[in-house]
Length: 283
Image 1: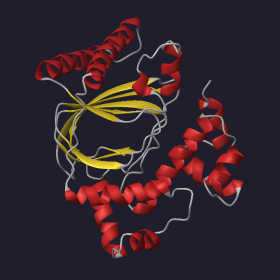
Image 2: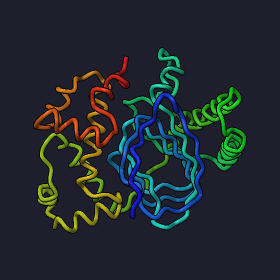
Image 3: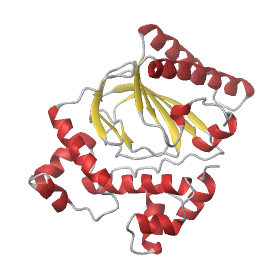
Image 4: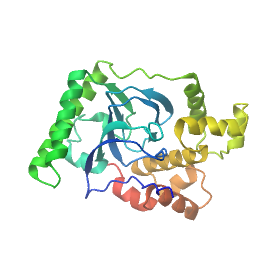
């Protein structure tokens, strides 16, 4: 029996997480979002990385920076061992720590775009040592644990900022097949507030719907229906965080009733839209 996918919601009680994995997976993690900043440090080449509206390959030694609410999927290949560190930070907690009057970690905001930064061999070695030391020595909360975490965050911030300032972000490697999928994703994202079906999308691209579904799933490990749902939930989260009311969001996204929107949102995020708005509304 396939394990149930856990809804990735990060609370203030558990403000950040650092994990190392060098393993395979028997099933893909479908496209999803977090109410958190995710910094994914891959030590293995990844053939199909989905970042919001783009599928591409990403080479080992790269930092993949994913702001809150961006749809992503970083799964490598079924039953293939792949090595990575994942740092996830609750967005609200991060806002309480950083000075809002500065531009510290601007790439972590709701309005930022995902980015990929390639590290030098020396930076890879330093970061791996820091992360390994943290994971080996800090199993429980302590002041030294927080100090070491912020030391890691400082190294990451310097690497990401350098990459962005010097335009060292990785040039995406996109195959023709991935380009075709990206065009489909772009069409979906432009019509999220309208009725979307596999038939209407296939007709727009003059493709057989079965072929379209197989092509999409090959590169995203999800059905088109799932991707549409995740993107609509992501858009709803951003709108609620910006201060729009639940009713406004429901109407703008084309949901016929509040109850339908409520059930959809809670299924996708784990909490009600009103509670999400209360917890995440931006000042």
